[in-house]
Image 1 (spheres, rainbow, N blue to C red):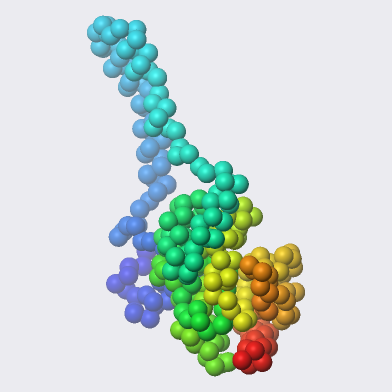
Image 2: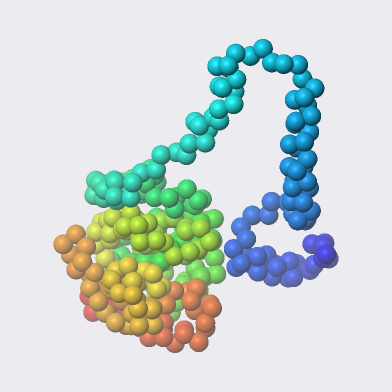
Length: 290
């Protein structure tokens, strides 16, 4: 086994990046643990436990406990086994709508979102990801869902995808501090899986309220999931990108265009030319609306 002390700083950095990209978020042990041997020990202990327990009972004197006490001791503790009550999906959607519509500013909406407990995605996430940047800019970028880096840092588009996004924005004269950045879903799905339809129904009122309060002049959707949510189609991002469409929110219609997510471009750099064409179209739309 290779020790960390045997690695150069560059090799160690590369190893940590590899683990981060693979979904490893925490190092729980300082030294490696043989879980297979541990499991075999547990199985052996369980096999020997019934025999040892029976022998101990045979050595004990007859119990003088009452029948009621014996029955009570033998009965399992149902209260300890009972899970916490879950909010029905339909009720959770209604609660989300009420919480979102009650907010009269992005600050109030952030507070309502952080207090909301009706979506199971929040139980496994470390951070609630809310919009950052300048809401008065009239420019809004919406990503698909928080990544592991977003969840750790508590802001949208962190890590390597965020660094690439910064370069993409700079290429068309924009900066993340001067626009509004957010995600369709405010909590990272476990293992970066795609949010379920029910989870999206619960989260939808919050992202739509963000749009309504920000009143952007144009929206750039980043990634397959974000494009499907707002365009209502099941095509891939390659079929949905590069076409101007309209998003209707709170009685207002906002021109929107989708492009590939920065993570998609890190995985397949050859598609950067497609994203560049979309960025130029987005920049042109912003120029015509000023």
